[in-house]
Image (cartoon, rainbow, N blue to C red; front, side, top):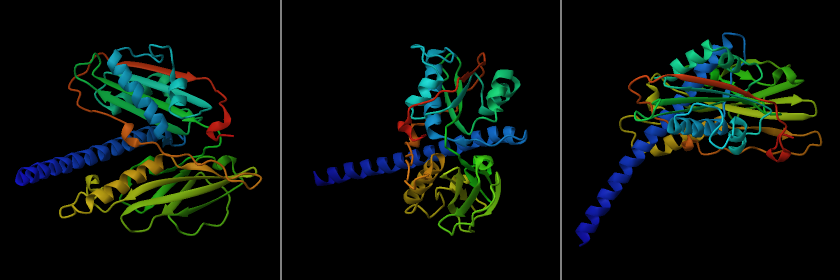
Length: 334
């Protein structure tokens, strides 16, 4: 009996170990794809003199949920069966915007193809190339038995008093410690300062939209934090990027030979780092000196995707722009 129990326990633990390894690899791939898609959008924007967008996990959550709805229903439209549009989905996910746009596509084999078609379509292009947006959400899913086989969604938004920082067009990782940092809100600020990791703050200086920063040489996640003084408030935002040696990106989470014991801890840090980077901006000081809300991260694992479509099926596109909306103050955008 004891041997049977031990065999069962050993088999169970082995199965759990394999499942955890698969889950880690899947999460890592999802995170990289999200950032790859953000970089593709930002390359199209920056080459035209527009600011890059920062991935926002609440927008990703809303976009992903609707991508799955579109594929399941086979109806590519901005209003769901209950008549609810992008504004409802964004607010339900916790994103309280003052400007919001949505692009939809179905039937394209890849995000690159969907992006290309959006850029060729005047209403989608207007969404993608609007200077009014600061943040981006991406949703994507596939099912060979569904009518369109693939569905792609984009949400583009901006919130009052949220000024994201974007490192290297929101790439997941870099091989060079020299990075380019875009600072949203720099045009509105009187002064700014920044720091790298836990290092000392720079002196308060004239605001700049683009910063050139030198990361420490050590491999791993590195954070750049920027503070802006706008009127009587000081706003703070951070972004993170993984500095890797010249290994394939699959090794970011510690997937090296002989590194099995350290792998779970390093991957947990990698996943948490990207999660923090995607949603870490807040007001640190108000006019009366009181601190204000800091937004908390959601679970990035809610962002699901499958990329296994085998053929094209009647590609569709849809675009919409939601009117500017003032929202209640409980979300912290006072």
